[in-house]
Image (cartoon, rainbow, N blue to C red; front, side, top):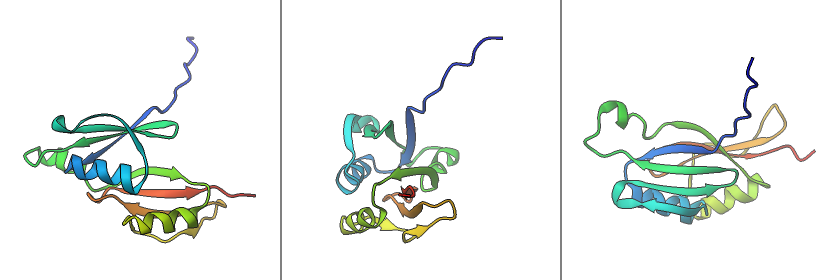
Length: 129
């Protein structure tokens, strides 16, 4: 049998309504660095550590199925070295948190937040031990 090739997560996509507002949020509030964009066509790409984060606009006249892609749990987590420091910093930048930092059974800590379109993410701090 053929040998399975190693796979590497390269890109995560998040769907938004207002691409200009989203670009400002991810660049200014989260501090991510954009490296490609075409706001007129509704997309921008950020360096997000080991992965690219692509924002893609869903137009107001898109199908209900496409509209449902905006404002949901993304399942994406941003790793930070100190959750409490990151939480306070992002709150001071206007980031809306949905859950305060909380220790988890697996040893790390998480805090939930949302972007201006309601897409939900987590900040994660791994156990320091």
